Each structure stands twice: as C-alpha cells, then as structure tokens.
Amino acid sequence: TGPVNLAAAKQIAHWTALHAPDGEGRVDAPTGNEPYLAVFEAAAAHIAALFDDPELRRVRLATLTRRDWADRQLEELLPALTFLSQVVSKGLSGAQVEADADELAQHGIDASMMQSILGSLAPTLVGTQAGGLLGTLSHAALGRYDIAMPAQKRDELWLVPGNLDAFATTWELDHDEAIFVVTAHELLHNILRGAPALHHQFESLIEAFTEG
Image (cartoon, rainbow, N blue to C red; front, side):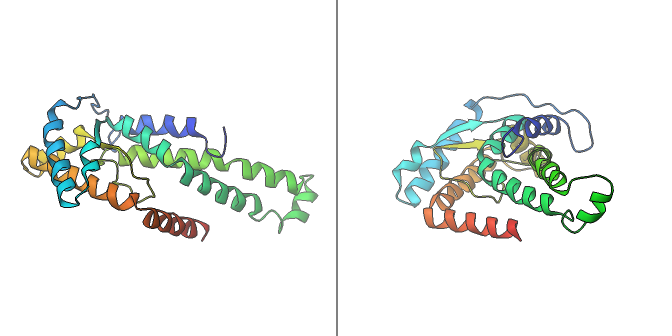
C-alpha cells in the first residue's frame, strides 16, 4: 500500500464525508459551476487588479462535493502524510521494544520481528486517521485552503457549494457576497502559499513539529 494506506484513507473519508458528525446521512449532490462562476470571475478580476497579476484571472473554478473535497485533499497532502507515516513508523518500531527485548525473548518473541510488525502499522494508522479527519473537516470546508498545511500555488481553486450555501443561509449573508469573499480568501492564499520561500518555510515548520 506504500508509505500511506491511501485506499483505507479514502474509504474512511468517503463514509465520514457522507454522514454528518451526528451519524446521520447528508445530501452531497454536485451542483456544477454555473451558479458560482460569474461571482468567482469577478472576485478573480478584483484580486488580479489589486496585485497587478493578470495570471490570477486564468485561475479555474471547481465546485466539489464534500466527498470530492476530501479525496482531493488526501491526494494533495500525500507528501506530508508520507513524511508523517515515516515518523510514526520509526516511533512505533522503536516503542518499548528494545527495553523489553529480554521479556519478549522469555515468551519466545523476537524483538526485531516485533519492531517490524509495529512499524508496518504506520501506513494504515496514518491513512485511517487522515481519512477520518478530512472527512469530518469536509462538512465545514468552504474551499481549497481551509487546512493549515503546505500547498503549492495552483491554477484551479475549489468551492464546496453544500457548505458555502449553508454557511450563507445560517448567518443570513448575501449569497453572492459570500461567494466573493470566499473566492478572494482562496486567491490570496493561493498567492501567499505559492511563494517558494513561504512554501518551503511552511513545510520545514510542519516537518519540525511532526518530528517533535
């Protein structure tokens, strides 16, 4: 399955994305770009003019279901999850095994074999935890950059209509204004996280935190 069990991650993410945190099923139907495209393009034009960057007007919109959002985040975060899996594997394979080697031997258990077994659990543990977390977050996510993890600058931004519409309704916001603000937020993060120096610094901070 590789350094991260992506199949397990997606299974958990899909189930969690299709069920509300209280366990009840939730509608997650695709809507298409059309109801959001005009406002998205207006926001892109505004930010492009503000930063004098005509390339921003070429950024595409993708409207996603919660399940699709979780899927794409798993793919996008795979390098970070792979690094985390390696750290967890190293930690598990060394956890108490060396200290308990004599006791394990008394029970006919080889310490090196136990280390190998524990280390092999990491891809599945990281995969299932990441899938569950992203599936849960998919019920609140509005766009691509709602997760504080390293991400490259992309030519496609995401909106999650099911969440965006519910957010606007709950807070009695004008629907088009909500789309405009979320789009501007996404474009600004796309600019900032796409800056090579910031991206690499962000990655190094995450890795240092993960390694403890």
